[in-house]
Image (cartoon, rainbow, N blue to C red; front, top):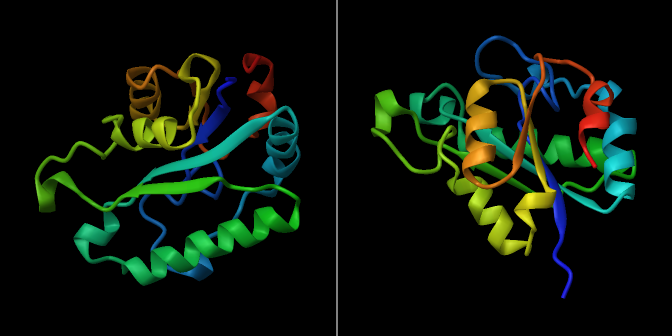
Length: 163
């Protein structure tokens, strides 16, 4: 039976504008529209699109899980309006200064491994696009090909790296 393939995506700096620190309010959450076309192209090639994001601001009390859910609902709504389906959004709510170490926070690979198992993904045919070295480390630990981009860089500029 054929397994799925996926492109895992970091959130801040990849799907929405990087603010330099946490996005704490819905009104500061700005989706990067230049990524609509490349993400639609990846979806049309059969890739599942799965978001993997550290959200330690919740542990710090900078924003609530409810606000985070509103941001993720907004992200899904904006992408759905462009015909792009986000299969799942995984996030780590921990921060090492507040909760100690956890296995889900990137560069840990647990969130990626959960997605791979849940959606029957062939990791060797899948990718993780992120704007931090920890994203590439997490992706490669889960057996994916990591692709490092600059914050807010158009994904179209790295599509040639995806088979």
